[in-house]
Amino acid sequence: MKSEIINRLLDPGIIAVVRAQKPEQVLPLSEALLAGGVIAIEITMTTPNALAAIREARQKLGERALIGVGTVLDINTCRGALEAGAEFVVTPVLRPEFVPIVHAADRPVMLGAYTPTEAQAAHEAGADFIKIFPADTLGPGFIKAIRAPLPHLRIVPTGGVDVHNVGDFFKAGCVALGVGGSLVSAKILQDANWPELTRKASEFVAAARQAR
Image (cartoon, rainbow, N blue to C red):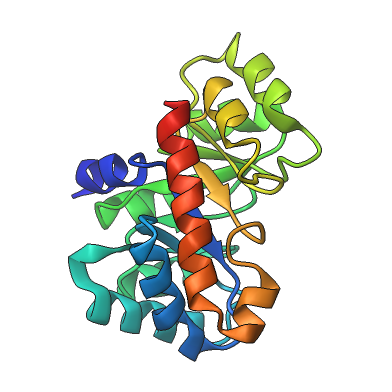
């Protein structure tokens, strides 16, 4: 199960980070992302009633999507999200205690890091992926530099990823990219402009495929 989810997360390697304004947006926005080829959807805990939204998305979308949870900060939320059906767990900070809980559910976990020391600590704790966050101030050059002495790290940058630098991040050695506001923008959510979301998703997927 875990290895299968990991394989799907890496192809095409675009993880949509969704901070929905209301829970009823989750299904239509997920359908719009799927139509554009983005199957990995990380619903953050900042979404109102996030766990209920995750449960519903898992039930309705089934195998077509990978529904994960983001912005998980404590053990209770981590457990609750797994019970709701989250297929991967992401935290923006270094939470090594999540690893045994998520792995017991046969799911992958992504721990947050900002420095080389934190990134290596996350790896040693057993994280399947290292979320470099926020990546906007660091950029692809930082990822490339960090992977020179630490080539074993499976890095997923989040923050600052847009359709123009997708290629640079992949070339720097990232295994996947977390894409938030440059894909699922506040304006798209506000206007419920799902065709625009599908268009953007397909742009990101094309850029990812080209880069690899």
